[in-house]
Amino acid sequence: MGLTLRVSHSTLKALVFVVLASFGLVGCASRPGPDALQVSLQEASGTSEIRILIATTRARADSPHALYTSKRSEEIDFGAATISIPPSHKPGLIEWPSPPPGNPESDFVVRKASYIDGSTAFRQEINQELARRSPKDRNAMLFIHGYNTRFSEGVFRLAQIASDSKQKGLPVLFTWASAGNLTDYIYDTNSVTLARDALEETLLTLSRSNATRVTVVAHSLGNSLLLETLRQMEHKGTGILKNKKITVVMASPDIDIDVFKKSIIGLGYRANPIFAIVSRDDRALRISRRLAGGKERVGGIENDRTLSDLGIVVVDLTDVESQDSSNHIKFAQIVQFGPQLQQALEQGQSQQNKQGIGGRLTNAGRSFTGFLSDTAKIVITTPGARAAPR
Image (cartoon, rainbow, N blue to C red; front, top):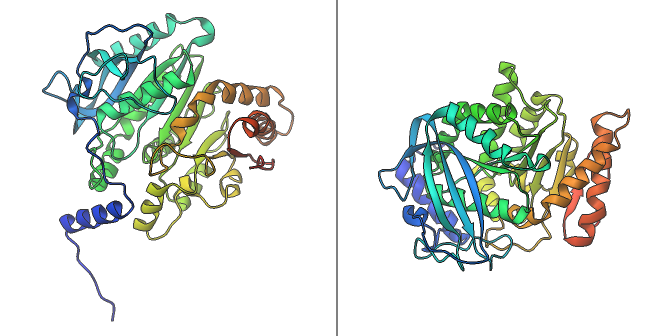
């Protein structure tokens, strides 16, 4: 006779906390609080500023320093923030403002923060920001954060990515209502489900904007939101993956491999390859795998060819030394190679032949191999091509 165990929600939260603690992943006291977005009026020489546009399903905060909370909003909302990057900034890291508002000579600090009044104004802001750039820089990057991410963390992470990539395009943050607590995984997964329509609206807005290229970067659980939204759009006839200016990058995807396989196949033809950034030593995804009954997570896949056989370009960072103990944010360390990555992709695509997307991916893979094997311990696996040597 089988034994049925009934576990209360509070007991489940306690169990998750114990598992996370055993891996040393429980949050530390240095995490930024709601006041991390306090505006700084202090001037400093040698800084650079990045203006970020924001689309969110978070509820607005009562405090002017917070902007948004971890609570859910019934409707999509919009905002903007300007972040100052210190001259001493090191790639891959975020120099948190501690205590807020921080010192612009050594910390990321907020220079401006405000709401944007509605979808029409948001669309206008996008095109106005693009118009301020030279034609070659009229690109946009949409970043979708992962599980256990506070609003301020999403803002500063995108600022770091935009700064390190040295791209002059427009950074846009889609931030869903993560609780920002390790023990609120269920709340976060439900927030992901509720955010699909809002993400669809944001993706369509960017794809119809004046941007010449739109790169969508999702991290961890944010990939589940992105993948489900892309499927939803395909079913509705509003899919964007056939659009040549759309490129999708999935960093450390926290997705069941079986779910991923079925979903990717359902997306059909893609004008550009989808990139998956993976690492077999990702401790956060090992925990997710354990909690999911041992099913592999895409971001911690054991065999890269499992993904490349689905038409995915796999960027394997297993041999890259991480700046964090969980090995879960390695993707943030390689954005400094953004220009080279984009150039390699374009070189591969410029050599198109009658082999279709498989041939283009092979050429892109050769281009990637050409520079990455000399600059970092990164392994690239593409459909129809061998992986770059370690």
